[in-house]
Image 1 (cartoon, rainbow, N blue to C red):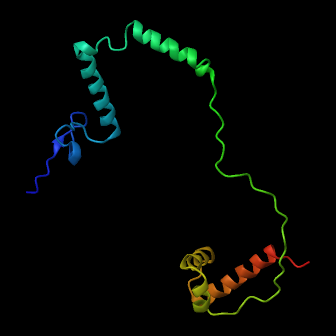
Image 2: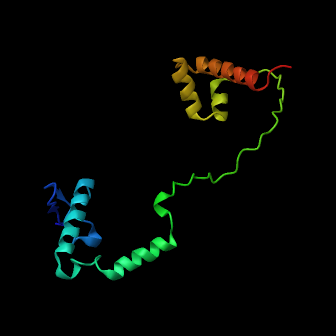
Length: 155
């Protein structure tokens, strides 16, 4: 036996292994509903202690809140500030057409796949429904030519 203990969660009634760093004190499992119940029980136990019943009551707490409100006027009326992106706005650049009129290479798929990742070959096979290497190579050359036609139109 390795000494791993399992205890029953009082909320969901499921057995769980407590965190090793807190094994002697952890009573609830880590499910969100159980954590919520654990927090509610903890607050209830804290408030039941005599010394904690009036913890937030009294003149000193009223004064503390009044000072904070005076230092933060209109806090409750403030709208959420718009988040600013961490990056600068894109600078508009003039497009430069580099016309490449060379024909696409007529390599076999093995030669093409050295230059292209396997994901690209798989994507072409998925899109075209082709499985033979020669067919995929032909489709890849056609896609490359279409891309060149779009990126570098003849002028």
